Image (cartoon, rainbow, N blue to C red):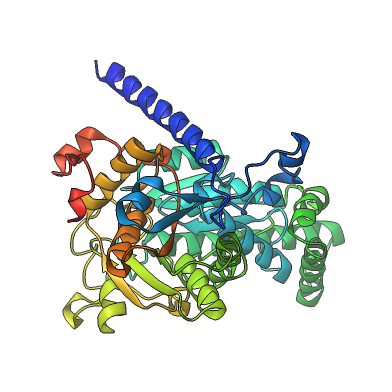
Length: 455
């Protein structure tokens, strides 16, 4: 009986996803020539509208469509637009971050072709790294908290990455998933050094190893990796796969460090932000998004502010996160609540990938005009409202972002253009956020028929 119920639920979710993708397609082909973010509908020839062929996986990342969310736009009198990042090959906005982190690491020599990228992630970044790493000839090792939706770790394993599930603890604890991921990279580097030394001894028949020679060999290997980025990311993907030396020696590890690695911020400052500006032709009035690592909101807000200081940028913060207080009051919490004096957030939230109780280097780059605080029920109700009215099957962070977009619209009033991020789809949130039994156990069964939950 349970198996039948689960199968029915999976079938329903798959059907919802199919309807969502079809609805997105129809939205993008509606007659909207008067809107700057919608292309002309006049058809001159079938071939002229075919998607340009892209070379490899990496080139397919980015340039995601900006979708008018019709139900929210009509309800508020504003143009509420969602950047459809769930249409990236890896299914989320984190594909951009994965590309930027790996390319910068290969260029600097911190990561060798054939090496292992390690990361501590609640899901989306890990999935993106596991998706992108093979395109550069690298492997992936992910450490994930065991309270994350189980389908996320299943996806990562299916992508060929190593998955290590651990209990959730404070970031100051040595066994926090991020700290374990950092250790795994160090362990991989030590293993690589031992294997190189052993290989050198076997080749030279000497027990004595000249460290200068060893270092020169390692440097030379890194230099070969650096050359692959000379002609751009699309070319680098092809070059890395061709030049990778997949011998028995370990090529070491590299800790992606998405929270503190500024490549995260740069991915959105150099990539996502410019796309939003171009797609709206600079006509937007506000941008709003939640933050986890802070890379998206920091990169996009800083870029947009540099283009037009009048654009308002806002944070949308979920339950248990301290960023709302940081933005609105300048402090995250009292001394008694400081990170490290508790194991988890003050109370649980069902949203994943957003909210944090420390300020990351990436978030420090954000230029914000204010912040809003959201609730789990609002995110749950919003996700069902979007599915029912727009065919958009989005995850918890995307739903929370849309709650934020409506809040901004209510404050600014009709006639404004507001952009947010549709981070990922609901397909990786089936066991919790889209699980009726789970929601009922947490008192979050959706009941709204409209947007009354935001009144």
